[in-house]
Length: 617
Image (cartoon, rainbow, N blue to C red; front, side):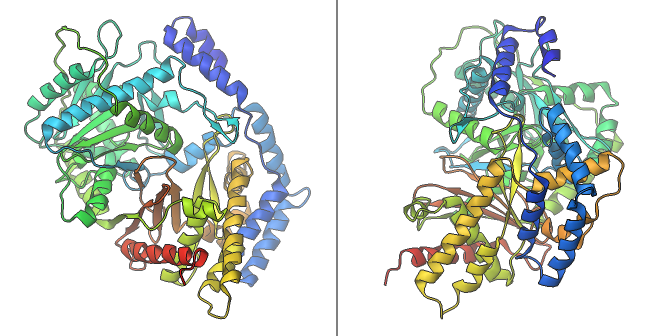
């Protein structure tokens, strides 16, 4: 891969050569991702099943796992091939993970896949201030892109070790393209002539906005502001046919509509400009304000899916890697597509934006006339019109089915667990399992996410819970016969057990990627899927009723996405020093789950855990 880039570098720009040097430097300092030992993974897998299954089912699965892992069995053969794959590829699991977790999924991108981040409301109200802030935001993102292009973005570190930085250049000018069986990613940023425009969408109308001057310099905020005013003057009325809604469809359905759409030359050109743009800016109408209490939830939902076809959902192109949402009422945030982007790089980008927004515009606008932003037109025939109508109906059904509950827990933040020498993340994970148990009278398979960027080309790994220690603590917590000291000790053991699993995953020894790799290796070789993956225990263990995610940001932001399974929840949390932001989502179609019930129970549980550690009596 790298040799091909070097060959092509002779005819590319100086900026591309700087990026290449940075990428080579980054790769040389980051080790390859290890393949964990097979016996270790199988043992960890069985241990992870213990809190979820009765003993007789565990015995059945243990026999199956032992058969798979025995010397000369299928497990060691697949392990050997994985180790060979690791020696001959940049990363043995990441391409498979991206393909399996994202590109092969046929579910719609809004709610099911693309995470949204909602940020604190800006202190303004009205379209004039909206465009001023949007201009600042665009300038901030272009400034961040320049730090990547010129090699000035510092290599990040975790625990004193450098992280792989390869995702950063891919954030811009990239887009997911729908296909019949799987999607693929188009990266336009590495072309000989890199794109110099962004896409602005307002009232369901798309515009190509050039953001660089003819001499290659970035436009100033006042130049961008003038262009946004021109876009506003061209988009007074809402477009009757919201083209962006098509990207919210089931991926197979959208793939068919995409092919129909691109048969027309005008449509192909317009879609191509959206896909190749650096990013999308969505200028939204105000979020419907019912009450202050529900505003945070409504605001997060607005960023996540646009609020419905009668609101701002037509102001999205869900396939785009980066979409920034700026509302007339001061609401704002971003939406990203996970096949190319993930949490930590997005958090770094957000941090840069927030820092930049505190500074005055450093440049005076040159007195140069600018070309009019180009409105993108579409030829909509009867078939495309029908596709749009179906997409509108399906998206509204999905949006109405999703319950979003966002709240700020203000009793304490990450300082409390730290005072008691507990990991804040592990503290919250145990609290989530306890709250879930109190609502549903059972524990469930839950996945947290850790980064694998300590390795070359690394992406993410799941951390599985509950552990035996968590179950023991949950069963003991409401037992009046146990002393407070005994409960504190059990709580500590539960939190420490989760921390140990998270550390194991950070070191490249998580079990989920390894099990997936073994399964996909068998499929690639044309073998039958191994029995351990057809076992009901594996199905139960990967039916993630709790999808969790910690926002790695020092800002009061809230991340939000939908559950992984119909009868599950998705819970994101952002622990700050003295408070924690939470978002909980669940589907209304499931009678067993209720986001508000879990939210109320979680608040009570957190208060009781505080009382356990710091008794007031």
